[in-house]
Amino acid sequence: MNKIKVLFLCSRNSARSQMAQAFLKKYGDDKFEAYSAGLEASEIHPLTIKVMEEKGISMDGQYSKSLDIYLNDRFGFLITVCSKAEKECPFFPGVSIRLYWPFDDPASAQGSEEEQLEVFREVRDQIEKKVIDFVENTDKYSNVKDNFRV
Image 1 (cartoon, helix red, strand yellow):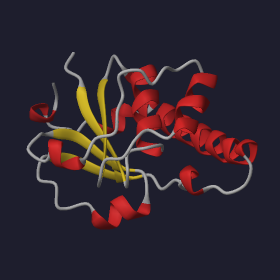
Image 2 (cartoon, helix red, strand yellow; image 1 turned 30 degrees about the horizontal axis):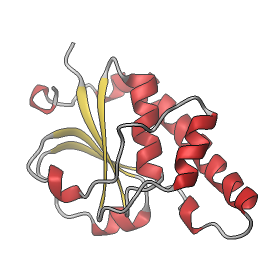
Image 3 (tube, one colour; image 1 turned 135 degrees about the vertical axis):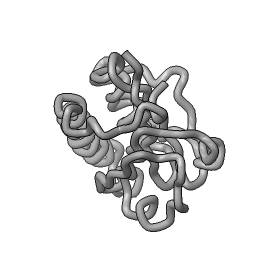
Image 4 (spheres, one colour; image 1 turned 135 degrees about the horizontal axis):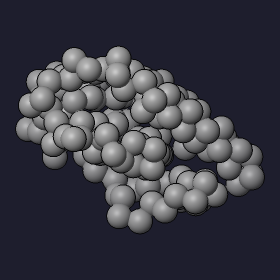
């Protein structure tokens, strides 16, 4: 079976899109090939790594990337996970289906490290639920063309 390529896009590729990529690898690796990028590259937020490890998911091998490296690629899905990416993402001709999954930016959380961790956990859990739902309901996306698969 050919896998459908999915690109998660965020503003800095430091938290939300990284989490979504890792969860899609965990839950949908048999159907999807997951990628992530940001409007600009930064670094994976240390609390992203910490809260994903709490779920038993290693972020080894993942790193922050700019959208520019994927502009000539084809994807079955482009999923923006923040309002900035949704508004500022350029026209992306190599995408079959574009979705918008808005999540709050955990990196903007204030307070103690424990208070920030709680925000990261909340966003992580929302993303995990959304990814599981996406994987379980793949059939409704049967219109992804074969040339958008790997």
